Image (tube, rainbow, N blue to C red; front, side, top):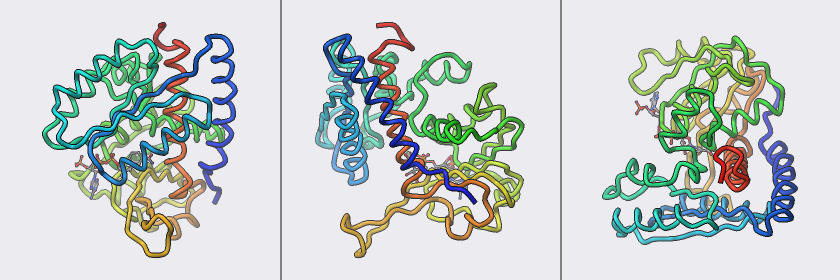
Length: 294
Ligand code: NDP
């Protein structure tokens, strides 16, 4: 078994991004700028946004966190998004999900200018991704593809089984793995909570991508010997053993599955770190105007 090491790969790519950000600063006199809007006080969301902001600083980006209370109206939020869309000093704009129930996430996603949509959730970016055109790719699946690419894993012709079909992880993951590109060219099965006999489906996989949100859902009996196992899951449980007061678990039973796998991502230290890289790369591209000219 070999580790798909998010710590190592993300540190390396971060170094490249830092150099590119410095070159951007040298030629334009400004830093790439990411704005993140956070609504309410969900603990996990606050942690994710803080980490995104910290990583921006680390690579020499400017970052702004706009924090609203949970009772902000949808109209207020859209008005803010529209003013940030029009602001030339803003390159990338993200709204941290989930949002409170009174705010429609689809309307918020579509309010963001697709040219600043560095989360890659806007229908224009999703459509362009499907057609293999230049676009912002959702950060988590993008991070997974960068990881596979870094380790030069030849995925062509492999059978990939993606577990989970969310708009932000499972669905785009299935599109990327199926695309005629490198990595890619997989035969893909996309599974979800209505799939019959999910164990049998996963057992056929050369590549398993687990994006379910259920601790240790993927057990050793479900995994074919030699499979490549990508664990997207982040399940937080309170713990008295850690400084933060919680501990993270993946959707894969790592200890049981690792001896059977050819490659596997740990949690933490795997896909989560690569997600940040996906976001930073998209923000840099947005600033440079390489995907959508400024
Ligand atoms: P969602 O809750 O949006 O989607 C979960 C998916 O899993 C759904 O498609 C659901 O099916 C499916 N599912 C749930 N239960 C089962 C089951 N028993 N059998 C088969 N499928 C099931 O989650 P996300 O995609 O947003 O996130 C998934 C996990 O990844 C979470 O742990 C999340 O924290 C983590 N995550 C990690 C990131 C990272 O950076 N590493 C980034 C984003 C998310 P259905 O559609 O039928 O309901």
